[in-house]
Amino acid sequence: MDSLPTQMAEQVRTAAMEGGPGRRAKRAIQRYSTQMQARPLTDSAAPLRIAQLGNRAWVCVAEDGVSAAGARQRNLDLVVDALTTANVEYWVVDAADARQRITVAAHEHDRERALAALHDAYAENAVYIGDLARPTRLSKLARYPLSDEVGGVRVFSVYLSTTGQSYLGAAHACELEFWSTAPDDGSLVAPRPNRTGARIPLSDKLPAALSINEREYPTLEPFTAPRMFDVTFPIDVVYTWVDGNDPEWRARKSATMESHGLGRLNDEAANDSRFASRDELKYSLRSLEKYAPFVRKIYLVTDDQVPVWLDPSNERLQVVSHRELFGGTGVLPTFNSHAIESRLHRIPGLSDYYLYVNDDVCFGRPVTAENFFHANGLSKFFLSKAQVDLGAPSADDPPVLSAAKNNRLLIESLFGRTMRNKMKHTPHPQQRAVLEDLEAKFPEVFSETAAHQFRHSGDYSITSSLHHYYAYLTTRAVPGNIRYMYTDLSTPETPGRLRRLLHRRDMDTFCINDTNSEPENYEKESEMLINFFEQYFPERSTFEL
Image 1 (cartoon, rainbow, N blue to C red):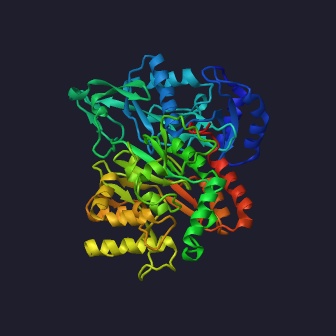
Image 2 (cartoon, one colour):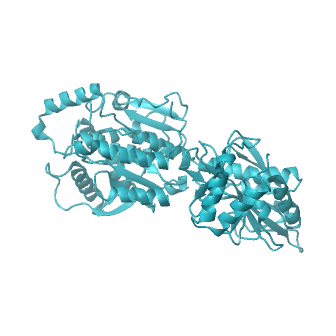
């Protein structure tokens, strides 16, 4: 690899270690950013750039399309390639999930050789290191004094989008730790706890291979066994989407509304904002590809519509029309999301466990299958603090409320329990077996909901609520916890909430809903939303043309 100028590396290191958006950090960025952008790595077409991220200046690899899982594997490769070149024995301890860093181990007696190997490979490149005991002290590898007592190191590059609006850094580092050998029986002893065991007996020190994205890494047999709480079954995602600006679709909607008689519809049942598309789906798919690598396949349910930016040839994506979904059931055309949701479990080829995701829901940081399901097949649901109003369902209720009341009446009749809470606007973990069981026992719940072309006081919210409560009371689901944010696009608080979210990026998922925006605010709200999305998810996904 090309070397970075020693003077530049030192000034960037100094600026980074001092922290804060001070003058030295700013001068370092201004002085060297132009020449850095023209310095490609020899093993990549990506140039290097200096950027101030948070309170520090970093030398970054400027490249689009790097996912969280991809950054973790690249950092793993940094470590194993250096150790392999230096002929230092190592093994992967934990090919971690999205919330944990990948860990590599080497022998304690190879500590000096391992650190020297990293130094020789990356001393003058955009690779950073930190002592595991002091993870906040990160600097250029060539300039960081590591003592003989170091229990391990954290190695990573910072991957920056070419727009400079998104990056993956230390959170996705590879950690190299040093294992000792017990003098009494030759066991390997870990310097800290891990998910398998802190002591590997001599009898279990059997070599094995671990495959990650078609590359095999050496490990030991105990680290290849499936863990008790790891979800291993396939999980798909189902989206529903509509383009409310499509003239043909609007004509179908207008004709259907006229046939119903507008006086019979609640104001919120057919308002334009419910069907408006601001390309939220594009950014939701970007977030899924970047932060939810466990998803197998994506099904997009539409009224014979396809977004103009979508690449339908992507092997992981299948577009499903309402005609295919409903078959000879329900009434089409439908403009009722409750009706569409009542048929999702019938998608051919859909996995037994899946997530139902509205197009206005995004993944805000790396998530795992375990965020939504337990390894034994139990699904999770996420209760809101908001409660369902008391009283019987009424045509005067907003449709979402009358559907919740209908859910409550059914649950009470079955189990003698009263549901009080709504659900959070997150991805909804679903089990086909639960929905098939419900439909077999209460076919009228599904058929009547599917027959309502617009939201109706007789609807049930089957996927977003009824599924969860029924699964819980039949011992197939449990409450879960998730960090999420919900905001309505038209509320005054939304701009501030989006700024905070963009700065902190500390939510597992978030939903930016649009329940009833005023037409005169459409352009302004769209500009705000797209600006936010382009800063949070600036890189195209493989689902885009």
